[in-house]
Length: 259
Ligand code: PGA
Image (cartoon, rainbow, N blue to C red):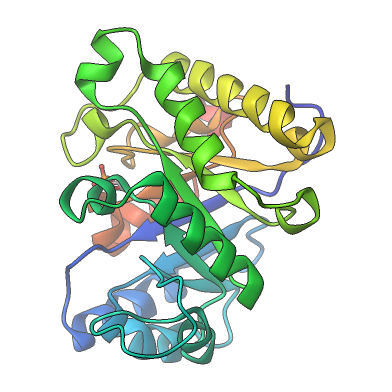
């Protein structure tokens, strides 16, 4: 299912890395190396404490700023949390929601992720919703069931009019930070499934227009093959986005080099 144009998006998820100074410098180096005629989108997701420095560093470029998480509440006694309005105020346009590290380490459920989706959308932040199966789930043939459950949970009660800008990132947990990338075919198959689920939930227009990123050990030397797949609309990049030269190569991927 790939008949309409979807603007590709390459996103860097910097996780809990870098000082304020390092994040500002990395963002500046990426900005400097960007092709001025780049047609697709680039998103940087630094730690909360580094948002300001990155915002300053990317000013005047076409890059967007994202948080790695968001709270579902608007304000109040929620120690340690950051609200959608605060993220907008800090310059974010996007928020990563439901990353597998949040699900696994911080025990986030589909219900919590759904609340975060609703709060982000209500505030005008674009969610980058992460879904993906563990190795055990893949090996016991549960991949599609898991993806279906995660999509149903994340989108529960959200009307079609509200999802136009939502981005989905398929990130098989077994490929994150492990150096084991899904093969381009495995990723393409999962993306087709995600698009079918998107159609089931919201209809064909959404399914054709929603951008589905792949994440999990995307590197300078495998991005071309991944981006050559018709249903892969971009990448969510962890480790490789922490090195300016490598991430710049990912950003400037060249599917035409794939034979
Ligand atoms: P990785 O992380 O590229 O280091 O595997 C991807 C992610 O967690 O988004």
